Image (cartoon, rainbow, N blue to C red; front, side, top):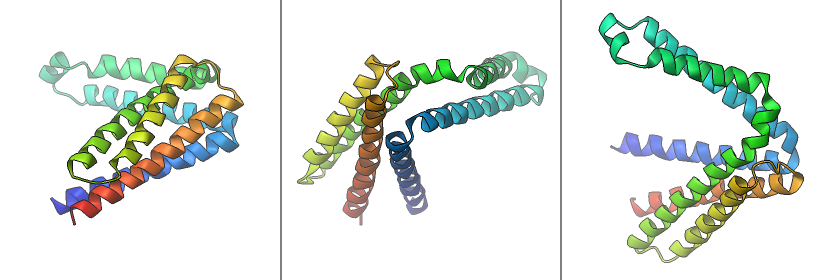
Length: 179
């Protein structure tokens, strides 16, 4: 159990650091960051698609009939390739995608805030504020997906930095509660 908690803690910290790094990149180099994100997403989708196709090829006949590995693999691979062929189209909707992540992350922060409140942590409201701000920034991104402008990049960058910092805060508080 301790090993699981330690691995989970490390995963959350790495994810928080990634949020902060991408947030800083959005603030300092928005166009470059958009292209990196689209490239990474395209690569991840392509690799996943290939893995699903290989899973189908290596399956026995019964599993091939019962699974959707081949169709999922082909569709995912084609979407990944599309990210490489038409990055500008993907970048135009990147704001909505990132906004959705911030929105969901803010909702998770609210959940964690109420969990901390139930653990009688006095400053649970700080995390509630972080959650609400992340939800608002995420909602802005979803509602204005084509506005990848300097202002939007600043909003997304600040939201990602704030989300990363709030994750580190949550991890610290929950870890210290269970010690």
